[in-house]
Image (tube, rainbow, N blue to C red; front, side, top):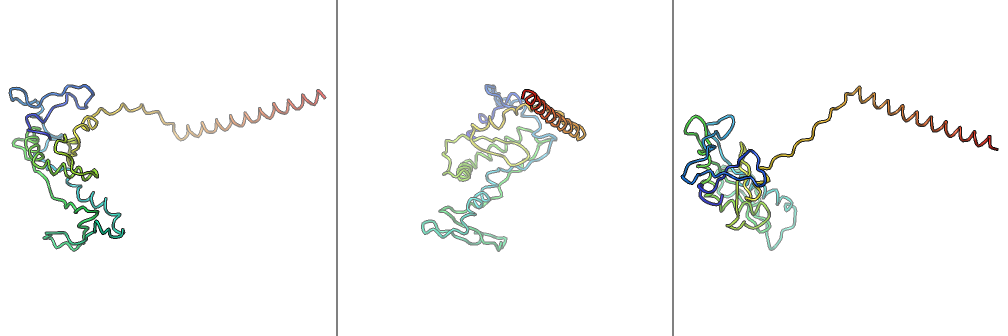
Length: 235
C-alpha cells in the first residue's frame, strides 16, 4: 500500500515465504499479468466478496476498551471526561457514551466495506486487487491515523510502508510492511506424535514400578539384616 497497483504487488514463488526467496512481479515489463492473476481468489470459488479492514472495524471498540478503566477515575481538570449520546444519531440510540477521555475524542466506527463482484464465473485475483488496492490507497491517511492510535502512538508518518498481512475470508489485517515475511513464514515441522499407551498398559506399568520399588525395599532390609548379623558374629 505504498504506490500505484502496477508496482505495489509481488508474487511469492511458493505458499510460504523463505528468507532469500526471489519475488515475482505481478506486472511484467510489457504490461502482462502474472498467471496467478486469473486464478480464483478463494477455494471454493466465489462470485463476490465483501472486503473489510480489521483496524477500521475495531477502532472504536479498542478505544473504548482502552479507556474503560477511566470510568470511575476522578475528573482530570486538564483532560475532562465528557459523556453524552452518540452525535448525529438517527437511530434514537438511548445509550450514553464516553465522548472524550484523556484528551482524546472517541473515534466513532464507520461501516466501511467494499463489495467486489466477479465479471465471470468466479472472482479472480486480478478483479479483487484491481478493486481493493485503490480503495485502500484512498483511505491510507485514515489507516495511518488508526494504526498509530491503536498502537498507543501518534499518527504514523506518511512515509510508513504498509502492507496487507492477511488476505482471507475475514477482515484484512494491515500493518508495517516488514511484518509480511513473518506472517507468511513456513510453519515449523511438527514433532512426530508418540504413541500413547492404553489405560490398561499404563496400569500395568504402574504395577511393575510399584513391585520394583517394593523389591528394592526388601533387598535393602535383607542386606541391612545380614550386615547386623555379621557384626554380631564378630563380637
